[in-house]
Amino acid sequence: MAAILEVSGLHAGYGAADVLDDVSVRVEEGGITAVLGANGAGKTTLLRAVCGLIRRRGAVRFAGQDISRAQTEDIVRLGLAHVPDGRGTFLQLTAEENLRVGAITRRDRAAVAGDMERVFGYFPRLRERRAQQAGTLSGGEQQMLAIARALMLRPRLLVLDEPSFGLAPLVVQDIFRIMRAVNEQERVSILVVEQNARLALDLAGEACLLETGRVVLSGPAARIRDDDTVRGAYLGY
Amino acid sequence: MEAFLHQLVSGLAAGGIYASLALALVMIYQSTHHINFAQGEMAMFSTYLAWTLLQAGLPYWVAFAATLGISCAAGMLIERVLIRPVEKAPVLTVVITFIALLVIFNSVAGWVFTHTVKVFPSPFGAGLLPRNPFMSPHEFGSIVVTLAVLVLLYAFFRFTPLGLAMRAAALNPVSARLSGIRVGRMLALGWGLAAAIGAVAGMMVAPVVYLDPNMMAGILLYAFAAALLGGIDNPLGAVVGGFVVGVVENLMGAYVIGTELKLTVALVLILGVLLFKPAGLFGRAVVTRV
Ligand SMILES: Nc1ncnc2c1ncn2[C@@H]1O[C@H](COP(=O)(O)OP(=O)(O)OP(=O)(O)O)[C@@H](O)[C@H]1O
Ligand SMILES: [Mg+2]
Image (cartoon, rainbow over all chains, first blue to last red):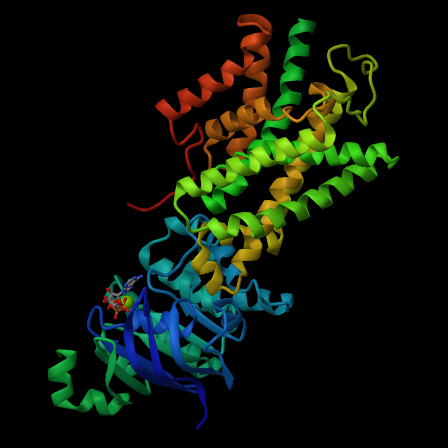
């Protein structure tokens, strides 16, 4: 099967020191890959490196193209949407303006209007709050808005950094249900970083585990989920 | 009563100029968090450019449009060549760059165009408006032009995708990049727009204060007061602040302190705002949850 995203031998970091050491990750076309790991393991750093936000070295291929030297803006335009750590909401813009920013590089105006309706279908709450300043939305609503904004790009790959962070269990379930729907119905591939290992492993087909900047384990999510030693040693449940 | 109305209208006309220049300051502040001290001198230089084009025989509005275009391009160039390299430098470096820009424009203008005061024409003619003894045609025209600029800018930022992209880039550069926005270009465009707005202000004020290399010094101070009064990161506040400063300055000058002390009004306002309400009258409309 073809990979939509293929990272191999990636080194990346801030300033002089590398945080990531020889990291390799794959997302299959139409698949979901989860990245697990403790605080400070380098998960956010990995996503930033993939999008070209920080210094990096190694091979990164997206949709058949080498993006290891590409600018963030160009990578996004190839169809990679990134919901960053902290959500990256434009707090002073309205919810609807946030969504329009998500689609700002697209030229197919009519389809954009249709997609706005489609994301409102996933997140009815956002339709009610479309004219509201995004900074005044609740945490859960802001997370929905962040995912909706990313979907407005009509991405081929959706990259999510801890979508469950700080949310009530019911909202988390809702968001994971929508991620599954987006993946199954729209064939959007997903790369997701998640602290909640159980949820992530249920959602994902593949998973990898980062520890202090290295991949210590990777493979089918089901196998990692069902391996008691791994669970005990790394996942803590 | 008529004298009072006349002062009021003059205040509004001047206020429109301050509002435009204040808006230019705010636009650059929003994306760089610095005050462009050279904004006034850039406007002055644009006005000399317009004067040169007029001397060459171009019709007024052709020269006007050409000046806007060239100023915009020059503003973008300045951002690329001078400001981009110090983007991440310490505050003092940036401030010194701005001041260097101010001095350079001022001296080059003096060198090229001499310090002799020049008359700059108004496109609206001289004399008085028919049946309207308290307003000169230029005051009326200048209010209309500045209001038109403000409305156009509002519509641009509010309703066009490019305007939205520029706002997004200023508010959250990283998120903007992650949405595919070329943030560097948006910053340059912001400088271009600010320069063009300044050019309008310069061309509208020059018939009143006459053209010379120091013509914008006082006006920049008023604009600065206006921007601070409205809240330095609030475009609407800057515009309202501009009109308030214009009217207050004129009425104070006419009835309270005399024209010699008018500039003091701006300084007192600046100090007052900084001391008592640093966020400006309109604060900042960011509502964040606590
Ligand atoms: N902007 C930065 N500048 C310097 N070092 C950083 C920066 N961001 C992260 N780091 C360092 O990189 C390492 C990995 O951080 P990263 O944010 O990638 O961890 P993470 O796995 O996402 O953790 P968490 O689960 O807490 O979000 C940490 O040691 C951190 O201190
Ligand atoms: Mg993280």
